[in-house]
Each structure stands twice: as C-alpha cells, then as structure tokens.
Image (cartoon, rainbow, N blue to C red):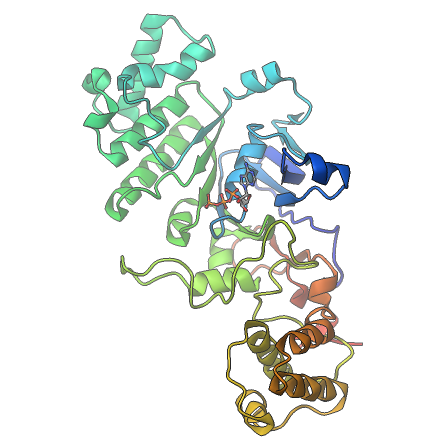
Length: 434
Ligand SMILES: Nc1ncnc2c1ncn2[C@@H]1O[C@H](COP(=O)(O)OP(=O)(O)OP(=O)(O)O)[C@@H](O)[C@H]1O
C-alpha cells in the first residue's frame, strides 16, 4: 500500500483469528509531574509519554507476545489495559465491554477475569503467608466459595501448576524461584480468569527453568482456555510462547505479525536490529548494544514522525536531494558521526576520504556537507550538527509523518503491520521520490 493509514494506528486484526477478547484503541498513557504547581501555571507541565496511541486486538485463546527494550512502555501498557493505571486517552474493550468508563467497583469486579503475574515471584508473595492461603486470597477477595471450597480448589490448582498439594502449608521461602512463579500462576488461576497479563514472568529464572515454566503456562492455557498478553524483552522467550508478536519502541507499536512472519520476515528496522542482536547463548553477553546505535531518546520529548528515526540505519533520503543510495548512506553515516562527534577531524580531504570515498556528492547536498566540514574544522561542531540535522534528518519523511502500513505477509495467514515509511510506494531504494 502507499500512503499512511490512520495516524499512529497499528492494527492487525481483520482476520479469521477467532473472536476478539481484548480490543485496545488509541491507548495513551502520559505521566505528568504531579507536583508541577508552577509548571502547571505556565502551562508547560512536562509529561513522560510512556504509551502513545497504541491499538491492537487479542483474540480468544491466543498468546500475544509484547517485546521491546527496557523502558519502551510495556509494563505501562499492560497496567493501563488492566486499569491499574488510568489511561490518558483511548479505549480498552474486554469481551465487547468498554473498560475505560467503569466505576472503581466495576473495575474491581472485572479484574477477576483479567489477572496479572509479575516478574519477581519473590516479592509478589507475602513471606509470612503459607502458599495455600496465598492461592486462596483472590478467591476470598471476590467472595468465591466457602473456606473448605477454597482450600480444595487451592490444592487442586497447586497440582495443576506442577506443585505438590501436600505443600499447602509451606511458606514461600521453602520454594525455588520457578516454584514460586508456579504459586503465582495458581493464585492467578484461582478466580478462573479469561485473560492473564504475564509481565516478564520468567525473566528472573534460570534459563533451564524458564522452558519448564513456559511449558506449564502453555498447557494451562489449553486446559483453561486462557488468553495471554506475554511481555518480555527476551526474543527467544517470546518466540517460545507466542502466536503473534507485537514490537514496541518508545511508547508505540512498530510491528505486529504472526510469530513466524515476524521472526522470518521482519519489516521494521527496529525489529530487524532486535533480531540481529539476539545473543549467542553466552551468559556474559546481554542486551542489544552493538547492533542498535545510540541511546533511546527521552519519552518526555520523543522524536517527531517515526520515533525510531534518530537511531534508524534506514532513515529515508529526503525528496529534495538527488542522492544515489550509496551517497545517501555515506551522508547518513556522516550525519550520525557528527551528531555523536565520533571522529577526530584531520582535514577536509581526510574527512571526505573517511566518509565519502574521497568524493563529496554534487549539488545542494554536497554544498551542505562541504560547509559542515568547514565548520567542524573551525571547531564549530554544534553548528555543523544543526545544519546537517535540519537539512537531512528533519527533511526526511521519517521525521514528518507517523508511519503505519500493512505489508504483504510471507509466512502464516495473518496480516502484518509495520510502522516504517519504507513501505510507501513513493520510497524507492531508500529515497523518497519527488
Ligand atoms: N509512575 C511513573 N511516573 C513517571 N514515569 C514513569 C512511571 N512509570 C513508568 N514511567 C516511565 O515510562 C516509561 C515506560 O516505562 P515502562 O516501565 O512501562 O517500560 P518497560 O518497557 O516495561 O520497561 P522494563 O522492561 O524496564 O520494565 C519509562 O520512561 C519510565 O521511566
């Protein structure tokens, strides 16, 4: 397809994937500095734009994996969906019912159907309580069964999650991390929910234990007809458990597709970078550094257009310059190097050799580059950086419009949404045509 669809909306649900269970539409959560009396007076209250205009659907019985670097807004999105946080904007419908306008009491009763399990099984279990009563707590809160009924169900659930029901009277410290996460699962299941948000549920566990817990979660899903929103930063974990995968960057969804499609045919440069950075199984190697350049910008003042553009290795060339793909790549690398001040300027020809194979492009683009080189040699880095950024980065379509495209899928049957302007018809070989 050619042009941007509704701005910021990334939705991949128009298929026969089953009945929608959860529909999220334009969900936005900004954190505003509550103490901002003075800033409020001047109307300049700063807000952290943690989640911005996110739309997607989760179907009954599926697992939607949600992946992205730390701080990209995964937990805030999950908490806003569950109404643990009040949305700034947008709607969440669960089984066709809009949750956004429910009263506090209605939200509380709705929560029975929507449970959440967290990363750290240690801190989410009260060390003074025995695990049986821990599992019974939510049933008690929702007035389910009498005391005997609750105990019976708790014992049954302990067994279902792979624990010994005889351990009903033990305290959490008697269990390993994996076992404690199983207690959490039993507790979440106790109120018979339809939907469970799993926020990094296996991240704190040893790799060898992770697969076992994930397998248990899978079989519980089949047995109880559960639907999961599964959050993780680890792409191998997401691949193991998910049916579809959504990728988040700086508060927005950038790609959503069937699992196989996303892993085999990623169409967003951020997803591609994340996948390239899956570490070889070496416990000393962590994170995504190396492939993804630069720092994540602040969510207080995120980049315009595509939020990934300031780190994107595929930034689109502005329409006004007639640059070949090679020249654009050189120009982009030069721009990045100046922005990061990552080289020692020796002289004009040395810079031209280092970044442009000795030949700066012709025309207007060349004139801008040459004057930037002069400014660098005069130690005016900031002026050079500003000129190059304004002339190239800010003129790219990537800076001007929020991308949102549906692209052809090669694997699976579901749609594939990718928020990258390279999928416009008027972008050819990384350059926007006039
Ligand atoms: N209560 C809050 N007040 C202000 N800012 C917040 C608050 N909670 C989260 N944030 C900010 O919102 C952004 C998104 O945070 P969030 O915890 O949702 O990300 P995440 O992807 O879940 O990260 P992680 O994987 O590290 O948990 C971050 O910039 C974070 O600092």
